Length: 304
Ligand SMILES: Cc1cc2nc3c(=O)[nH]c(=O)nc-3n(C[C@H](O)[C@H](O)[C@H](O)COP(=O)(O)OP(=O)(O)OC[C@H]3O[C@@H](n4cnc5c(N)ncnc54)[C@H](O)[C@@H]3O)c2cc1C
Image (cartoon, rainbow, N blue to C red; front, side):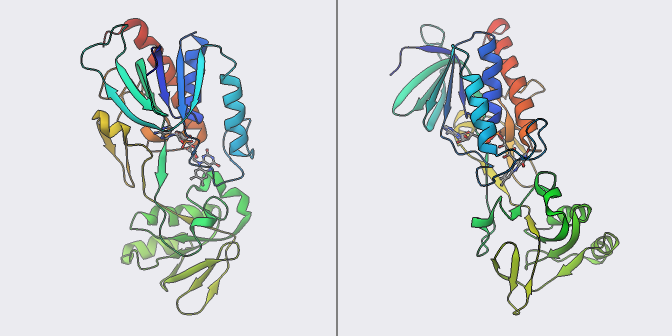
């Protein structure tokens, strides 16, 4: 067990967690960032839509961010999986409110920031998983432009995929591959037609080559890229273990926070994909920035 009591432990050291750590490091607070290195976008070689970093390898953005944050001497880094976060009912001597287990040790802090992200639950289609982030995507703003207005396939996972199918024509001629997941009604068919979307009902056998789709009926459809709306789950059960309130979204639940990123338990903040329904690197960075400042203010002004 470590005797040290950190002002803040941040679980998750990607864009949101590092952004939070930067605010706290700049306030000269003692911070421990615990991270196991499994960023959501680790499958992609280019990240788009974040000003000053458009088209940069997401691993490079994360590594630069970490190097900048670690220049602040009060910030420490631990490469480990954090397996438990616990609210201490009776304050520990020294004022710790939270205990976190990571790498076989218990660490203590006065405040906790959860920046643990989410995990995409991909549809089980042969050839899809290995193409995730390369030629199969979820976010048109992130990867649509680079398809250069070529043919796009949208693989349905549920009725919610209608939204995807209606958006994608802004990036290229779109085919909606229903794959038995959903059947549009008459009104939906008219809306799809109005956006110029072709509808394909034959089941998908496999994704091959770049983004070609082999259908069960023997045809092969060629696309510049494919999109699918995969549901997601929180990467870590820590929010559940702490009993935090959740916010239910259309394809997954995230940690509920107030406008200052504080969760339903005082002193616990959450940011990035784990705590917002709309996800991007830029939003995670902004969110982390806010959570870091809010955790700092809480240290100064709140009794928890
Ligand atoms: C294929 C793909 C491509 C994408 N492309 C883009 C793009 O081009 N542009 C864009 O803006 N967005 C893109 N995104 C979205 C982007 O990846 C996320 O919005 C962003 O990563 C969220 O940052 P975050 O810090 O909240 O979470 P993450 O980046 O997912 O980081 C969470 C961190 O917490 C760590 N962690 C989780 N649990 C624990 C634990 N128990 N103990 C220790 N560490 C833990 C993880 O290992 C990880 O390092 C893409 C997503 C995908 C899936």
